[in-house]
Image (tube, rainbow, N blue to C red; front, side):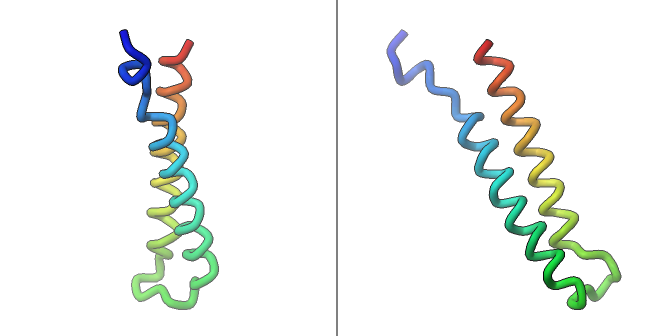
Length: 65
């Protein structure tokens, strides 16, 4: 196998989702007064993105072992 075939895209993708989810979650906390439904949507979806990124990163870490 060549070196390019061993590259696992899950690690950087997981880190990207964790980072962007954190940014969106912080933005949701900062703009709590702009909630039309009473639920901070940015906080919820930022948290969902962070959990998804953590799962993808864990899959990459597990595959590396």
